[in-house]
Image (cartoon, rainbow, N blue to C red; front, side, top):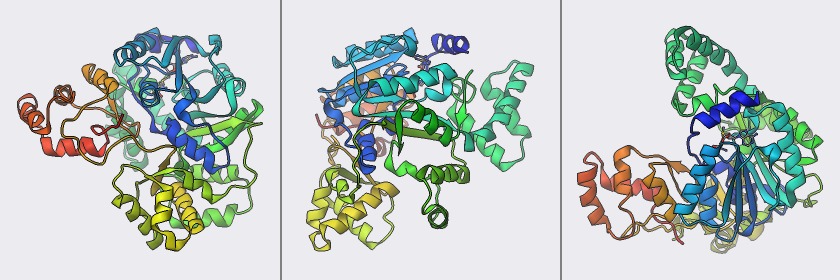
Amino acid sequence: MEEPLSDLYRARDYPAMSHPVADPAVNFVAARLVGLEAPFPGDARILEIGCASGHHLLPLAERWPAARLTGIDFSGRAIRRARGLAEEAGLSNVDFHECALDAFEAHDGPYDFIIAHGFFSWVPDEVKARLLSFCHEHLSSNGLAVISFNVEAGWCARRPLIEKSRAIQQFGGVDEMAALGLLKSVTKDPADLAIIDDMLAKGPGILPFDDFAPVNDAWPLDRFVMAAGNCGLRWLGESVASNNRPQVWSAQDEAEAARLFNDRPLLELHQWMDERSQRTFRAAMFCREDAPMQARISTEVALDFELLATGAPPHPMAERIYETIKEHGRASVPARHVVNALARFGEKEIAREIFLGIAAGWLSARCEPLRASRQLPESPKLSALQSACVRRKLPVVDALHRPCAFPESDYAVLSLMDGCLDLGGLKARAAVLSPHLDFDRWIGHLHALHLLSRLP
Ligand SMILES: C[S@@+](CC[C@H](N)C(=O)[O-])C[C@H]1O[C@@H](n2cnc3c(N)ncnc32)[C@H](O)[C@@H]1O
């Protein structure tokens, strides 16, 4: 099976993407909340397996100059693109190797973070097994591995639709998008239609590597956790704390989970949630079995983080915390500031609310301040890496590690953001280069993404 796979990656460019779920700044938080003293990523050794053209690793290298980053991928095309970007952005703390995982000699390990995003489900069984044993052999004593995979519970509903589309492709000699379009026109079932729409939304750049890839195995969580356990890895839950709960999850679901799973192992609860929410994807986090874990988890660990208010606070106390963060002048706020500002409620109470808020997702937390300013700069300046991406019309990664793609004409305006033109000058040039662009709204949107206000 390795051959059709390597042929695909050698022949076609995998789309450039970064993945917020594998951002060590947030993985650090998820690990600490479950009792692992995870390493600080700012000066860590970070390895990505199947790094493609480096779009995930390069912004991390730019963010953390004292970190040492390595990416491997067996696609020479992808590695050449990654190296080109690194050179143009002046990043000397990241190396890319054209290499298959089973041939990789990890001379610069052990690693504090090992990332394998979009890899496990798409490689043959022997490579899956090697990935897990590699993580055990090459993680530092308290290091973290983040491995994403497709989850059987929700993914299995896709298989018959993919098979039907493949049959249409073979019969009609059409590509995946056209086959899905035809399938959609004869499908009545709303659940199937929703899946087809989801696949169509991924587009022709992604589908051949994802749903229609030569290998695409979805596993139930318990099989994955057991396979990792057999290789000496301990499962720590999801890589983003709030993703331990399904995205759509009602108070009723929560109450039922508490009733059924109060005294049962966490893994059983997660399996049940996967089935109930028809989950399709997980980004699981592991450490070595022998990693030192806190015997008792204290909610006060939440006071070490930087916070952003990201969701709807569910009750009055949460609202107070939320407002305290919003009123502060910085893009992220130290949890200790919230404790000081709301001193009348007591440190323990605030720590507990923050802990629960991070788990529920109305707060998001990071290991360090977000390097972004609240103010829109007078003369916006993209980073060296962002500018290199703009020159290639690739997605630009924001301060929260999200990839932001733009229409062709917007790139012409973005390419002027080198700190020399002020907002008025940019607006005048944008009116010529991209006449349909509502500049004020657009610039506000970019600012909200923390794309223009990055601090060094
Ligand atoms: C689906 S892509 C995911 C890329 C990226 N990590 C992401 O999530 O956007 C899988 C990547 O793994 C690489 N790959 C697959 N099998 C590999 C192997 N055995 N050794 C090294 N790289 C491999 C492919 O070339 C490809 O770039």
